[in-house]
Length: 307
Image (cartoon, rainbow, N blue to C red):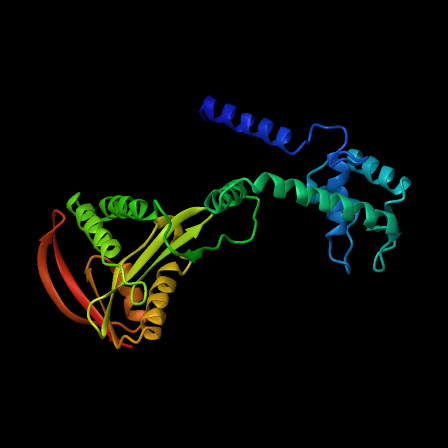
């Protein structure tokens, strides 16, 4: 492990503890320190039918049992916590908040939300999505096991189309050995899309997860009755989420809503995963033509379906 990585990790931890005021004796302008506030949070947000025990809190918080016991006792002495035998096990003390505890927790929770809002408020919408996405990614990479990462579909924003061109070129070079002439083709298609964009008949979907672009697709007007699906791509890290099929289905729904009667697309036979998506969404192979492009001998394919 590189020493600079460890140093950067520790530096971020110091930044975060300072940012949230974790080093202060009291947190959120209250009489309580961070560990006490966290214990109150875990008790307040636990299911009502299964209140936690001190052992349960210790497992969740990874906190020393002796230290946790002292925290719980202090909060109980302050009138914030009830410790009552569980209905199904008299030896197990279930922890719940008293009326006073609920009032204190409500104030702490409101103050915490206000502090978080104050930090997020100066950020633009893209920066805010990127920040929240980075937080989710940190948790996933460190195996904190949050809910499975999902994606959103949105319209392109400034900078997205250049990124899509770059990522498609890199992806197809890495996976299929295509040369830089493919990047030129992608750039040409994107440039034409922007230049001739008809918002009533054409659309681009950008897929985003954890603040990062993980895929995209374009639907353009081929003629008055036919829509053309172009440049479907999904990052390798996002495969298995059903994203490719979702992007194709969005194109189909949009084309149907806009009155198109057919949809077609051009691809190459080596793109096996994409072909399976097209077949699963009702497309049929119409023609095949050998060609030499992107530094490779390929077989181009035209697929189509009625809408």
